[in-house]
Length: 176
Image (cartoon, helix red, strand yellow):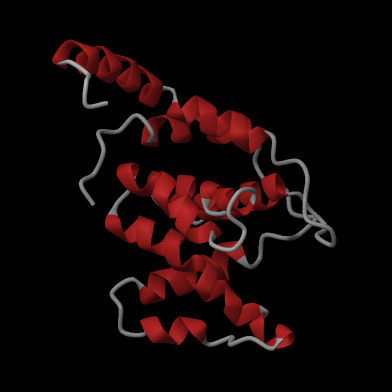
């Protein structure tokens, strides 16, 4: 890279900007492939994501929060041990600090529902008590995420969320 010229980097920058413009389409393609699930779950990862986003939409959440609800578990495939941070990193340039924090921390907050059954600390989230987004993250988990493993829930389709995905990922990046 040290031998690159300004013209070289201007050319690469042009291509990179074009590539970034296609992020929403790549996310949609990735999401459409989440039709497998970990053994034991009654629904696919895609269906869980659709249920979570549908619940957020039904509760009249902001567009960015609906998209965050849809994408909150995209890290499950490649980063199962830190999926929340992975999803937050994808969203971070396009969403508010609050939305990013909720997605980043939701994995720890979700432990409340199951960790004690596995010998873990179900109160892991308590270390964030007093944080300005603590209650919002509790609400995200309680109202949308933990309920969205229901094989009988009628969620919207991925196609229904495509306009919102494109809207959020076409925004000028935040400087979080």
